Image (cartoon, rainbow, N blue to C red; front, side, top):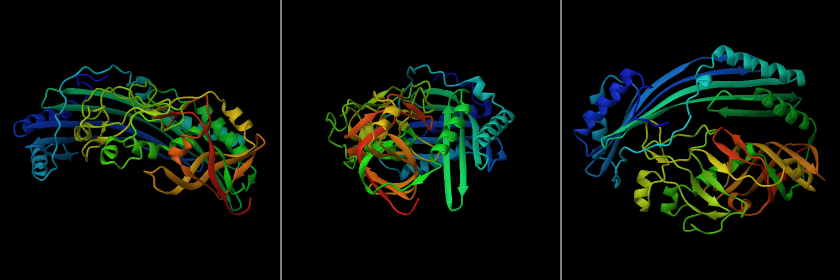
Length: 452
């Protein structure tokens, strides 16, 4: 939860943030200090062997000042010279761009269970044991595999203080695990991977093993698909890796205000399949992108971007909202070294009514795409995509035929999402911050070369 009790912060760090704000408030019209402290513990396996175990601890602060309608920003990870940080931010403001917004004051923030002791106390030895267990189980399925695994936990504290009386923050845990299998047979190299992420320690290591093993089994035979327009199923993982960038750009309030978004001027219009709804939900208890406020102190709330195919909203930070003449939506996202910009938290797609197995059975001839790779060509902002299928399968007469090689898929995100055959009835969390079902698009371009 966001609270004015910043007791989770290291005492010296909190004192530094308060001192910076005090010094800056005396000389700037508005001032804001953003602080981050985090502990990250990664564990890495490569080619069936443990490679890395480490713990990284970081602390840093950024100061935003507004002086005479101009903004300046400075950041520091050395926390022993608060006056230097203030002077640097004021110097930048003298050359800074104009702004026309006010920083938010104190507010009531939603209460969220973001910190979980089981995740915070996950020890490196237990991560190593989990990684070894996944690899051993996968090798029992296929002893020829070279397996990679990554496990990790993070404990992060966010603090935000400004000259308008805001002093709020929250602490959040997150854990993650991924499992990959490489199968080399002559000149053929297969790579399959799966991942999970969560705020609490509820990762299903067995499910990761079963899913990777099944996808390896389905890939034992390689086939050459025809070059044609055909129905293509995107798994949740493929949707997240291939289609999201264009959608995020299209709903970005800055690009809408500039007129660069293909959805600019289409608020209230039917732009997508009427079965499609899309919400950015920073309050989702399962989403690792959840938070009670954005990185500027605006209270978080769900924002419906698409409702039954109709464009309902765009997302804004303080600066972009002021330019567009609309209220901020609580989507200011930032790192330490840059001013806030519009960004999403947890993107949630509505599920449909068709089981995945039924989608496959209904295909006379089509492709199932699970992983994409390489440099994607095309105009991303316009929704165009064209790239290599890293892991995909040919389906004929409702049956899995084999893995496709040297195959590309191409289309347009907005046209595809307006011409959907089926939407899966089960949505999954991907990358911890996208909840999406599989989609079967009516017609995408498939091109293949080479031999099976």
